[in-house]
Structure formats: structure tokens, C-alpha cells
Length: 415
Image (spheres, helix red, strand yellow):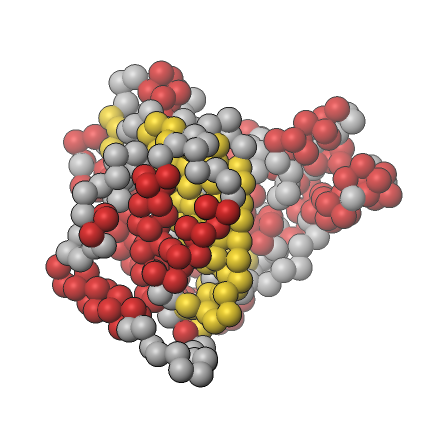
């Protein structure tokens, strides 16, 4: 999503909601400020007020998060670490600790769920809430938003920004406009006034290429887009054009969906140096399969479709997938399929910079049954992997590993 204009940002109320009319605004978008970096500063308070970058420090690493002191140098998330270091050579670089972030994220979600059951997490650091049903108990939406900000700060020592609006789309833009540590209410009757001055890149679905195409047509703001006939947008952009026209007038009727089921579970790794050794790549596929299977079991899921992602040194990305006869959460079955897909892709001597494994077509494990063919025996692999899960919970993630993973692959980054 493109940036939100400074004018909208100046309308943010740092004090906590102000006197804006929130009567038609039951939707909140809560977004932690520089979440991963903020969590790191909790454990390293001596770095507060200094440029800090969280991300893998290697040459292929990317920025996961950066403090606002680092952002003043132009550093932002998803930026290549090498470029971030050039822009801000004085920054402290901290490798990510995902377990620590998950711990804080769970605590924050507990705050949300004490307010309303209608919580839709978007990531570990942001969520939509529908607080319409909490009005009688807790007060108007702006007051609830202020309460959330206070509780997050008091319990976890970090700040968040909250957008309050009549729809998810506008609430998300509002939280972005009031960052960091702000609260912005967009009254229902002022949505168009809020939207139309914004750059067209602020709209959902407008990526870099679409924004460039719109600008070439003379469409630079959301207001410019709103004045273009829908038929013209459809002719230029297909179905996306009609969707953008709706958003340009603030029309977004999607509800907050609590506990939306995972659509897929996956993982990927970038090699610090391009790799053309098939054994190294197979070991990485195995490691990713182990990780994905453990996440499936932890979430109570099984899946039928296994896919691999293979990115060549020239950034060309190839994906291959296969749907299994039975849904699975067993690492061996996932790895066997991923390995076969890699070998069938004909890339065994092609230099790769990234590989990924993903399981899709998920369903609850409790509803899945295993249908054995005549004479087929249970392999016992799932029971063995459940035993590994128990050992991991007790002794840590490195307690039990496949023999080929006991020594880390020479090419892959991090665990």
C-alpha cells in the first residue's frame, strides 16, 4: 500500500480520540508501532532513542522492522539489509527472535478479546476489531480505542496506533495516517473528505505497477480516480478497476471475521549465496517440511496440497504443486512430495537463491480420516513426529532432528 498523505496524518489525535463523531464507526484497526523493533527495545532499553534495525544481518537479509530513528534515514521493512546498512550505518542490527514476538502478540490479542469476540488478526502486529457490540458495556468506539492503547502500553511497554471508521478499509488507512502512537477517527459522513486527497497508491490493490499505470493516465489522488468513469477503469484494469472505483468512494462492506481459518501454512528461506548443489537444496526442503508439519500439528490442521517455490539467481520464480490422496501433517510425506516436485522441475543444476515449501487446502485435523488401501499398513511416522513435538516442547527446537539436519546446511540462513 502506498503512503498516506501528511495532511491526513496531521489530523491524527495523539491525545486519544478528540471530539470526532464516532457514532457510525464500529470498526477499529489496531497496528503496533515498529512492533519487532519495539519488542527488542523492551529487552535492550539502552538502545531507546537510537536507530535500530531488526532483520537477518547477512548479505541476502531483509529488514523486518526498524525504529523511527532508523526510518528517518530512509530505512523501511522489506528493504534489503545491505541497502539499509548503507543508508543508516550507525544503526544497531538485531537478528529477529520470532518466539519473543509471538509471546507479546498473544498478550496483545488477549486485550482485544477481552473487549470483543470479533477480532480478525491480520498479522502478529495488527488486527481488525468490531466493537459495535461493546458500546453498552465499554462506551463509544473512540473511548474503546483509547482504552486499548493504554492497556497495550501499560501491560507490554509498547505503543500502537488505532484507526476508527465505518469500514475496514478506511480504519486501516486511518491507523496508518496517525502513526506513530496515534488515534484517528474518520466520521462516517467524512469518509470521502478523508479519502480523496490521499495518493492513489493508498488504495488496497494498488501496487507499484498499478500506481505507475494510473499516474500515466493522470490519476494521482484517490479523488482523481473517483472522477474516472467505472467503464473506463474496467477497460484499463479489468475487474480490479471496478473494485478500485468502489474503494475510491469508501465503499467496503466486508465484515470483521473472527478466527478466520488459515488458508495455507508455509515457510521459505533465502540462501546467503546462490546454490546449485541438489543435496543442499534437498536438506533445506527437508528442514522447511519439518517446520511446516510442526506448525500444521500445532494449529490442528492437515492439508492436501503441497507446493514448492524455487527462485533462480535471476529472480525468476517457479512454483510447482501436487494434491495428495489424503490430507497430511506428516513431515516425511510433505518432504517426499516437495522433493519430487523439485526434481521434476529440472532445476537440479540451476543456481537457486530461495526455496520454499507450503501446504494448502487445509482442514481441521479432527475431521480428517486416513483411508488405508487393502494390505497397506500404518507407517507410524505421525506418531514419531508427535513424539518429536513433545520433546521439542520440553527440551527446545534442536532436541530431535533428522540425521541429515544435525549439521546445518552450508547454504541456508538461520533456523
